[in-house]
Length: 214
Image (cartoon, rainbow, N blue to C red):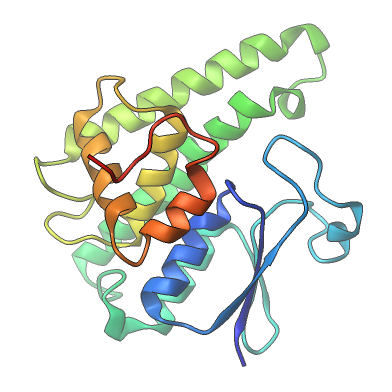
């Protein structure tokens, strides 16, 4: 049986779709009739009561939510594809650190920036919530920038699924904002021959920068 991924173009399920493609795993993509910033179909709550994408159904029917958890699961299921370091190693610890950091701090900041009404009961306070989310996102990307090496990736010389997450978040933040190493990782991820068509379908119509092209 194949995986089934529920997502909408331009959303965080991009990283899961790209990971499944890199793993050469059989999967079905169910594209919801919705775009980021607009409501998901009401019937989708029958699949995920929390009402967020992505949702991944594993071949045995287990439902996974949270894109970072999906990446960890896919890497573990396909160890021969070198999507992440081997569990139990120091490198795997760094992989978990940065993936969870980006999920908890940076992705959440994207949501605060884009959906501030979810984070306050004061209608007059949404602008401040959005501004704080944007600053938190920039600060978090700046921390990762300080850890990167020229021509390197999150974990060093080899691309991992953590780089897909970084590339997506940095692209959402926008290029040319004093994060040249994050921008370089984003360009390399977007240009990867397996990832490029997935990236372009998800982001070329939504973002001003055509990542992955000179």
